[in-house]
Length: 269
Length: 269
Picture (spheres, each protein chain N blue to C red):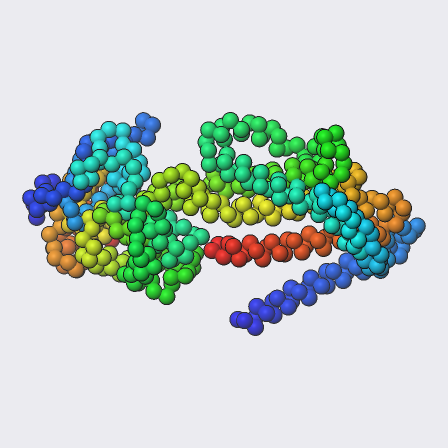
């Protein structure tokens, strides 16, 4: 299991996202300090770290929602300056438009003039089916459970067919059983769409369940602690020996710089 | 459960009717006990006066057009009030909403105007009556002007706080879905998000403007407010009460109508 730090060659060929020495300050606080890594095309890439380690800032920087003070995020060789339809984002608190129905939310990105869509209705219906929301098309967000809201969030981001899907702790507010089901569905969607996914979480089990590689971040300031490649076939069994060993490895990596690890990191172990 | 809520509704209805009945009884006894009788006109006298409002007819002049209109007296004076109430309310609401949206959305304009707004807003609309008198004279235009001032501020604040308070996560989501121009963001996110506050602002202004309009009419503009003071000058207090009741009815109808409209538009809440 000497898989940490140096990534194996199969993730280096077709680089999709490259973070190059990015730093971000909030006043005198450093949220990100000289963070570098790259994500391969089609990779499922997880970022774990304690609260306040800058992982959300990192994701927002990739999305183009947040400027960096130095360094750059480069996608397909082009530096990120603003949000773009090729990077979809799924938010922790869903961020659905409450005045739009399920259908209306999913359709939002398709209505932009920048997106040409020959048959939007069919596309919306496909997505409704894909995330298992048929029957709730005309419901407003307030009528949906947390898991259903996040399904809408995912479908809305997928609608414009982005090459990259950025997910900010998307399942943090749904119950454990729903989360397991959403993990399986997300992996199915990922296999179908062959998108590159960057998934931020503080849940080690979640990261090991989903990721090809796990980037471990450290707080104070936000730096890259190490990288772990999870080499287990999917679907992954949480009780399998290999799975447990990866979880322990990630936890140990996270723990090395902390005398006391934050409670959420420990909860599932 | 259904039977249960019906029972509760029935109970509340009966209690409401009971409250009204007790009030009428106290009013009736109080009126009987008071001498001279014109000090407190009783419910029966007031009811008769209300009916009498519609037994005679009165000719009024339609402003701008200048033609005569003959209507049942009570109705005629209500229409006179509406001749300045409606234009004042609609114009004030449009201007207030317009400025509120612009200021809530444009930070620089907000900086420029905020101290001015803070200074002007506490001035009660009726204080502007002096300018209404010297600029327009106290007729329809003068009264409409005062209604305008009242409607302006309430709607201004509804629009301003609604637009200013748009959650960052919604604008973030919209930017990742291809909304680039400020105007599109306003139209697609900020305004629908502000709709509840906008509508509440308008509904509040409808009520407040009734108070203002009656105030303006006490200074001499034609309408129900003027008739209240006119009747009391002749010690026909029961007629004053009848006009008060007419105002209450007119406001109730408008409020119920608008709430119905609001519920339909804001079904997503």
